[in-house]
Amino acid sequence: MKTQVIEINENNIDAQAQAGLQKAGDILKNGGLVAFPTETVYGLGGDALNPESSKKIYAAKGRPSDNPLIVHIYRTEDLVPITRGVPQAAYDLAEAFWPGPLTMIMNKSDLVPYETTGGMDTVAIRMPSNRIAAALIRTGGGFIAAPSANTSGRPSPTLAQYCIEDLDGKVDMIIDGGQVGIGLESTIVDLTVDVPMILRPGYITLEMLQKVLGNVEVDRTIIDGNSKLKPKAPGMKYRHYAPKGDLTIVEGTQEHVTQYINRMAAEKMAEGEKVGIISTDATYGDYKADVVRSAGKREDEETIARELFHILREFDDEQVTVMYSESFDDKGIGQAIMNRLLKAAGHHVEHV
Ligand code: AMP
Ligand code: MG
Image (tube, rainbow, N blue to C red; front, side, top):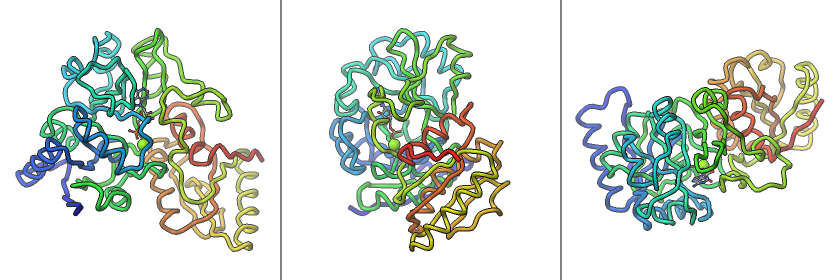
């Protein structure tokens, strides 16, 4: 298959861009696949109500078929046909956070095929704020299944270039809308249980959800890496977000962390490994390794979130074999950052 790549500027959707979005929408309506930017990461879109489209998504990503897809909509009223009753909590959260990086789980209606929900009776739904995404969902028929547009197991794409790396020749079209704004996947909250539960942390934090809903719980497996429990979001059990090399997170005082990482880096380089380090602006100059990257200022969680997958992809491109990362505060968005980093590291943490 030849993959067409088109460029659209989210801030200037002119006549040419609209024609491109129309064409992309037609591809979706006809059962094809289109990768497109959202405010979180790039998504790989297909018609969520067409079982054949969902099967194609799993095949293109190499995604296990028990890992359900998120259905993307462009207006709140479209919750009605795809669910069995919309809980008031969903309307309250939609009012507060949609369009935006929040996914809600509800009971599905018969309109949504099991191919899309990985066999589950529930469906995950999100309304993205990116204008390219919203327009494409509309031209594509209103219900677009779109997991992250990466090969299963690789870091989620924050640039079109990474979608091209993973999906060229496997999808009909890739829309290049530049670098995404958030850089981490959406927060997932389950509304089918008595007390709403966060199944995947993201940019919308526990504190933000509690302000709207009152009581909110967090799936234990997000916090406890050694938990024997099964995560409630099937996708969270896989070793997601994984770079190709071995990543270790190092925790401790700044001085101990830099000393430890430099010592390990020197040892590994002497053994012939190519070493990459994830630092912060304050420590960037203190490290010696083949590739040193700063994720930004330690206090600036939004930048760290946006840079994280990008740096892991860069390490892959540079063929780094061993990586060390500083640890980050796990409050607010930090909970999502540490969740992804811990998964990327296979929960390998050194306390120094
Ligand atoms: P991705 O689109 O690649 O960010 O992955 C979607 C995530 O949503 C995966 O972790 C899925 O397991 C999770 N998910 C989707 N639908 C459901 C559902 N009905 N119940 C629980 N988790 C879900
Ligand atoms: Mg994904």
